[in-house]
Image 1 (cartoon, rainbow, N blue to C red):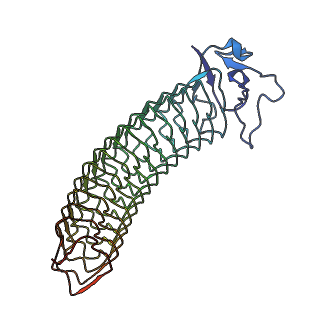
Image 2 (image 1 turned 30 degrees about the vertical axis):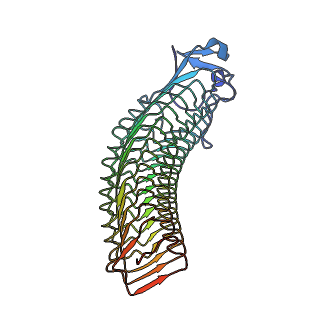
Image 3 (image 1 turned 180 degrees about the horizontal axis):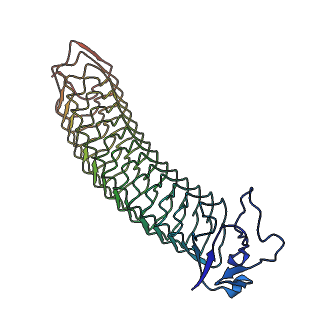
Length: 432
């Protein structure tokens, strides 16, 4: 394989790598080859004209003494080098700090990217390697100052199977759609990124992703909307060491149909589980929320259709204020709900637990002033007991417990201030 060696990133027309493809010149520099015919590329010191003369080019950028040090790859520098560029090795560019917007976007033959020695690299720009459809391996090991993998940086890299992030200790952000559409990417390990704080919208929509290692990400604060949506091979998410995690965004794990474990046990700062966050995670048998003492809201559809979920323990969620509409709708394996420590719980939304056909007991003791909306427990056909001891007041809306039990439903120790709407207990008598 021929090697295209560039001692600086300007002064070379690279039209031989495919059209259009030219190393862009920074505005404040003079092209040292101005006026010289440089159509073609320099390979092993020889000018080669025309892409047909080059079979498999490897781009090696060297930081050589007595030459201007390479500190950045400009925006669009090698965009659409679609014919022959197969490998990019920047590992000896020790002073490289950034890879610009769309720098290598659309390099259809690009297979490997080696950034392993780029110890000063801070940013991989927007769409830097987007739509590099042959790219299979990215080595970022040792990029100890890398902070940002920007929007769509590797979006649409459909053959990407390996991303090495070992040693990326300062990585803070993987932005929107950074790896979206990398559908054979199986593993992401962020365990050494202890400054990591945000996973962007659509960051990983990767259907083959089975494992995401977030242990060690003690500063992770936000998993944005749709971050892992449709990761149908994902089986385990351990967030137990993410002690600063505050938000799991809307549809963050939507339709992760093979997800079997979510560990949130150490997430004491978690305050919001977003709308549809775990909706249609049909294989999910357990969610540990036992230490989520600052959880305030479980939003609409958050666990809807999680048909394998047998119980939910919210007893330590003392700041929980609302369980919104359809949050646990159609959780047909759900047998018990413990809300006994939720002193601030005020709202159980419409259809929140509707059609939880295995549900037998609900513990609402100590829930203060509670509004139970329409159809909240509708068609919970095995429900026999609701413990309301210690509640100051209860307002039960129409059909809240409709079609619950063919026997009788016991409302234990309901408060004197209990308001019951017409047909709240359709077909049953809670006081019989």
